Amino acid sequence: MISAQSALPVVAAAPKAAGEKLSVLLVEDSASDVELTLNELRRGGFEVSFDVVQTAEDFASCLRSGSYDVVLTDYNLPQWTGIEALELLRQEGQDIPLILVSGALPDVTAVNCIKEGAGDYILKDRLARLPAAVRSALQKKKLRDDREHAQRDLAQKAEELARSNRELEQFAYVASHDLQEPLRMVAAYTQLLGEKYHGKLDEQADKYIGYAVDGAKRMQTLIQDLLAFSRVGRQKDAFSLTDTNAVVEQAVSNLTAAIGESGAIVKYDGLPVVVANASLLAQLFQNLIGNAIKFHGGTAPEIRVTAQKQAAEWVFAVTDNGIGIAPEYLDDIFVIFKRLHTRNEYPGNGIGLAICRKIVEQHGGRIWVTSQEGQGSTFKFSLPASEPYFQPGPNCEN
Ligand code: ADP
Image (cartoon, rainbow, N blue to C red; front, side, top):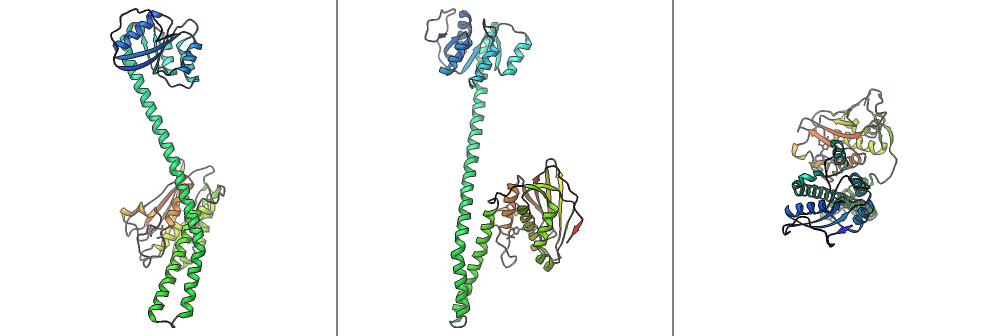
């Protein structure tokens, strides 16, 4: 091995180097070619430091001990070839641009080297092109490095986000779980106060106790809903092949009272079998169909549940003829506690759709809504399709 510090016979006088620093590992057995190459790089504006090797062993040991910006290698060497240098680079796990600097090569060989990862191929009698080729190889390497950094950053951010989400969910779960007991006490005793002292204090006291009872009850349902939200996905029930006809049937049966009161008609037919958690899916359909019943307009609710296979996923749709949603709220309504109406107009806590989104995302899908105010809404969600994906169900109407 010849290093930059060792005296090398100078073949051509090089112009004074001043410019970009470049550390080169040269694989070359001809001292004059080494000198020509270095001179060309200096002429091109590089301030070069270098090592020269001839054998694969020296090449590997230089790679391990040094830090190079670029490898310039002849193709035909006495004991090995330039393509083996490429393999060695890979084995050593080093991403250093490699440029072949060689006498004429058969086209197939040159193309093969490029395919294997060589950055460029320079003929020794056209060395003037070398500085530009080196710059271009360095630029590509920088782009590669930048992209890798960006990907690593992104993966790290995603991991941090996932961790902080997990912590937040844990907090919401613990808080809502632990708040239940003291809240039960407050609700029970304010109710007791109301019952025991009604009419015995003055009118204002009755009113105040009434407010306290109402507030405690409201907080109880809020806490219960929040607990239900944070419970989604905590039970690690396995996903299994699930007939969505049966799941919708279950959801509809859970809504018997609301369906009876409103005179709603719920139609579904020929829904597919998917890989899912059946109880989460039942909750999803129950929330969507329940909302379709709750937010009905002047006429009795008519609700249709359908599914369509689109590429590798099933897209389910729950369509109603209800009050619809203004375009500016179509995204917001999936956010926890977001409501568009007062509790006097329509009861609820604004958690149902947030639960729907959580369930769908846990199944690897998306949820969205299309709607026109006064014209009804269609809530759609996708689930990854899995074979067998279709099982004709009975024609059902409730
Ligand atoms: P909640 O039903 O308790 O209000 P949700 O999270 O289920 O909470 O729904 C959020 C809001 O989205 C509702 O308050 C309502 O304004 C709107 N919304 C949901 N489903 C429908 C629907 N089918 N038709 C019209 N508006 C709806």
